[in-house]
Image 1: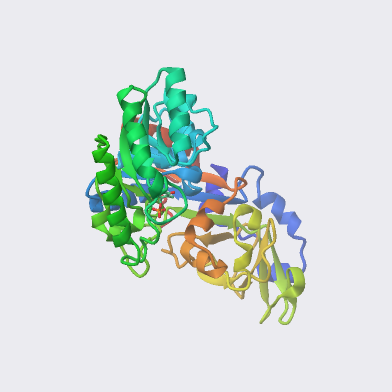
Image 2: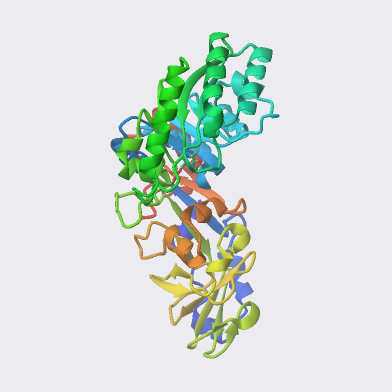
Length: 432
Ligand SMILES: *Cc1c(COP(=O)(O)O)cnc(C)c1O
């Protein structure tokens, strides 16, 4: 409750004028920064997750798999999974058995596909938990079948063929023999081949490789059918292809980035809403004079007299160091430059002449509704992609969830979100 009050009503006890008369900030800091209030938090708008899921599901010709790997791209795998399932996704996707088991441990019973394994891994927990496993080499096929024999549980598998990405997936030369072997294992009751799949090279730039990959994929599907396999699912598309390449949809589409509200197709606007807002409260406010250097190496020189805010997030929290020099954060109604190098735990914001003080709300990124930067802009400043910005937000940053609208949440899920947010006192808030 206390923290919510602080968040919703920025504390401005120390004004620049006061700071300039060098009144010790600590005197007021004790009053204005109670222990327990987070320095920095990532606010996850589950209504945005629900909306984005609906947009993607409306485009998908088949079913929608929500990719919740890497802790739901940093948003929290379990709350995102529940919200996406309530809003139209029917599958979940992760890269590891551990992530899949975390979903099961949370009571999620929806189909889950896990796709990145070593063949010497113990697949028994995955089989017992009813996790679908990807097969990306003959070694993986053998290992999963051996585990099925040992445990007495039929393994549900999706055979992954490489159609040009040359990252994961069965190499085309191994595919015919692998499909025959899979059919034999299926007839022996060890496997159920539920899916055939592949991954696109550059679905965000339609036309370059996608058509050739579709042809390769269809060839691989024919080959599997000739071997006697009859899987119910074929899947190839990611978020970008979900929105822009319907010829890749088949029975299932795997969407990650779009679920989190980042537009996956450059130059297009599908009305997705960024779900994460990263914000912090200024730890100190201090005067700066024109011409003074700021932060390591003094790479920034204050252009005018003003106020510097110490923002308690740094690259250990996922604020990209490479964005230093270009980055902006939002404070007191406008974007202000990050002054110089971003350090591990903190950075400095030049608030200029704005009326700001200790505890001031700083938006690092968000949906952009208040003029704050977006994760996509941070990605540009840092020379990376939004995936890296979102998944980089560190464990030290508190996650807080804004509930999805009642129209999409099932009663049980709704209650859970309410419980989580009961003490926040700001149910109506939507980072909007
Ligand atoms: C991460 C991932 C996706 C999701 O891709 P987006 O571009 O984020 O939608 C889909 N399929 C596979 C195999 C992935 O690893």
